[in-house]
Length: 99
Image 1 (cartoon, rainbow, N blue to C red):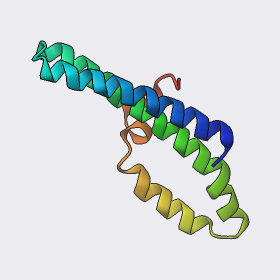
Image 2 (image 1 turned 60 degrees about the horizontal axis):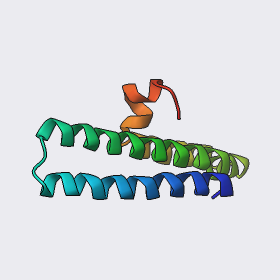
Image 3 (image 1 turned 45 degrees about the vertical axis):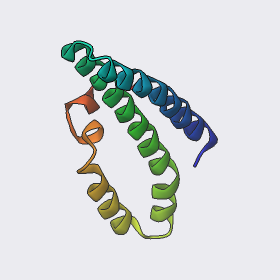
């Protein structure tokens, strides 16, 4: 994994971890459901951003390497299988700002 992608993913995941602890506290404190739902949506959006970082890394490293080795069809099939589970890549959120 490229260092800059690893750091970006780890930083986001550590932030998400803290955010998730806060959401758990909100549930335990029986906070207003719509407020909790907003925070859950924020965590989901952050996880989608991590997935985009991982995808970028994969394209820049593993995919380039596979194409150079003549394994393009194999890597495309693998990527398509992965992407069908990734709303951030295939869904409407993919068209939004990449931050």
